[in-house]
Length: 122
Image 1: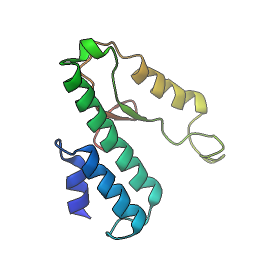
Image 2: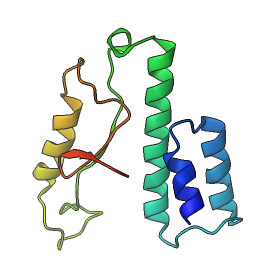
Image 3: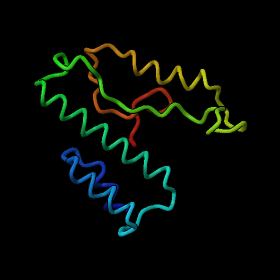
């Protein structure tokens, strides 16, 4: 649903609003895609943006928090969850996560979603 997507991508989305969306999804009261995994990832990405924004606000700037807050999609990896047909090794997925975890603290990356090794739109 385009309305739900625009709400999730709203830069002023609050934790309470996100909580309402999650409750609606779990209660089945709104029209969501049938793929629960995808919806759960959209909620995680929205939470990442909210948390990063609030932490930056609480500490006036990134340098005071000492933490970058981002989310990462490591890709489809050959793991118990990904299965044997996945195209990537677990090491390759771990490399993508490590690269984001090791960004310098002066990075402008805050509240971003990384996929395929770069900032992506959720």
